[in-house]
Length: 428
Image (cartoon, rainbow, N blue to C red; front, side, top):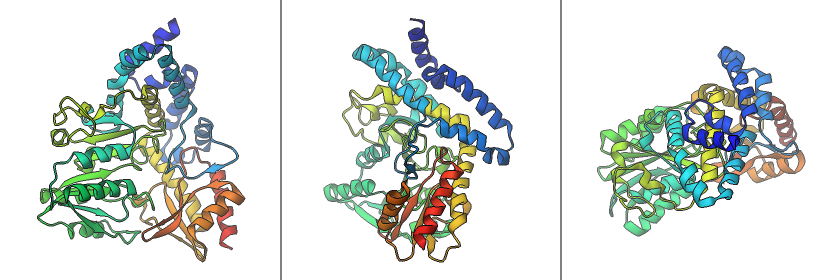
């Protein structure tokens, strides 16, 4: 009874740094707090190279020792404490579904919304909790008041789901899609901005910018593009599927009007969890994608009318945020970039090897995309998994033909040494 009472109290009052973490596992939370406090007492360089701490992070996940997962850009695993939270919430729901889901767990939604808003650097009434970036971006794309002849600027390197959403609006409503073809990688932000601006006309109403190109890891200058767009009365949608929880930024600093992300990628939240941001004054402009009593109203919650949903996975997002905050956004970013550079530096001088992510440090982070001369991306990816048990993804999309490699915070240097050995042998 005391355990249940503590559990239910924690749901409604989890405002502390490790509120959700302690709900999942008290002993882990106590140990984690000590680890995190020691970690943050270190200088940034020392923290970056504190392999004892990063090995503890690795041990906090339950990844297979038999397969090296280097496709975290697709979907990331969750720390065990997040899995435990998900299971506990799920079990509570099954004790009395309609009571525990609607009258208990749903009361923790606002605490979770506030937690996500704190991490995003925005107001809680600008955040909607949903299932993934595709759902959030579709909500915006199909909710915008556009008419035939209105122009939308986007690129051939955007994510296919978003491209298809816009093609549907083109087919249904007659909007005009203006396609850019980005010669990736691009090292100069001003050149990227000029590329977008050159496509703007008096009829342009929307520009969609993929914050990080998922194919290559290219980080786009969303803020600079947004500033130019807003000068011309153009609204900005940012596809942040690969950036939230990946590197350190606040959504409002991007100066976009709309943003959506998948929390099951770099935040390591439960599968099928996501978040969308709509600038407060823009909420009324977007129609709710699903039925709502006030579909054109000013309340961000109108975008959450999903009916019965997975309360357990939603509430476990809070535990993922706690775990992320324990590491810290900036220190996590530094470690992820360090991991990318670690293995890239060991193979970049090889004559048959080339890369498609920018060399400029701040224009990429964890993701690198490697090509080996004389071998198709699918051949390289197949060799990595079949011979070396290393899971990556081969990419053949537009002007991108390479293998994407995405480590995460649980990836060890020894894991990456294994990758380096495999690449050297394949490149022979």
